[in-house]
Image (cartoon, rainbow, N blue to C red; front, side, top):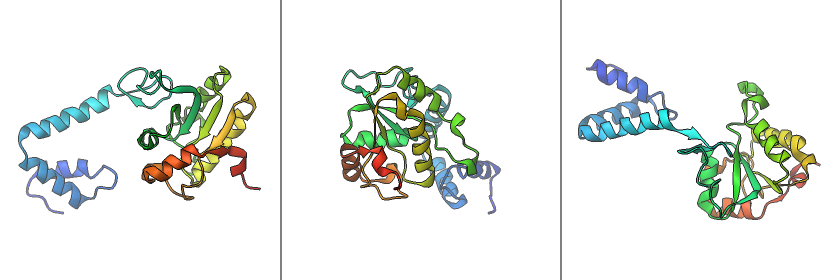
Amino acid sequence: MNFSSRKIELAVEEISRLPGIGKKTALRLALHLLRRPAGQTESLSAALLDLRNNTTFCSECHTISDTEICSICSSPKRDKSIVCIVEDVRDVMAIENTGGYSGVYHVLGGLISPMDGIGPSDLTIDALIDKMKTGEVKEVVFALNTTMEGDTTNFYLYRKIKDFGASLTTIARGIAVGDELEFADEVTLGRSIQHRIPYEQSLPQ
């Protein structure tokens, strides 16, 4: 791709680093920003810098947050005895959009994937075990994607926390095998979280 401006070329290179964006789309976005009022581009730049430099993680559930404890964990309306285990903040948002869950979350920050070099120590599993040791958790809901990595992580966690006395459940399989939670429609996901089943029933016989 030939560029008439080095500045446009650099902008296209940076934008195309984003997932799912090729050079043609990046060029279209760069030209769009160039045509918009300078204030809009400056606002976008400021928002991205603020996101990168000032975003933190909730000290209790590890989701992305603006404060030390996120709004979900700090809400007196949430049942902290029920902990839903998810991969990342996108899954928190997907489940919250259903309006059908009143517990709190534990965000792992990824899934166990030896092929990608991600092991248990790369996730927030130790923090989850510490949470289980308090004895305050009465139910753990496994809500990881129904992929090989998700199932592997579920089983690893099951073996780690099954002796703490909490009820271990998993979302009902209204979510098709191989699907990701963030792409499930709200009705299906809502029913899956409300009609969760004992985790042992999901294990291969």
